[in-house]
Amino acid sequence: MQSFVGVLAVLAVALLGIGTLYAVARLTAVAPDPVRSLPFLSGHDPLEHALSRFHVRWYPVTLIFLAFDVEMLFMYPWAVVVAQMGSGAVIEMFVFLGVLLAGVAWAWREGALRWV
Image (cartoon, rainbow, N blue to C red; front, side, top):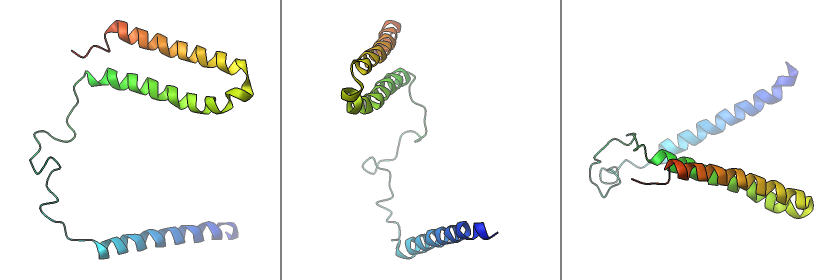
């Protein structure tokens, strides 16, 4: 039980801090202004629910964006160490880009880049 005293102390301090922050937020909160609580579209009521479905043509665009986003996720750390790793790292990156380019070519062939 003695080994858990520190963990319990940290847990108690964390819960006390969270409770204090909630109390301060409750005490300093400003009453909601009816004008500011209107929808964000210049005060107009929204035409559809915020959780409405997106059109199906957005999904391929999103997947292509994610493909390029993941490409950048791998290229930034690679750019830091490419000088230390040598030509093997360059070859590996070109293989990776080739696979990604093959995916984009497939998406283009399937018509994922056509908007209409």
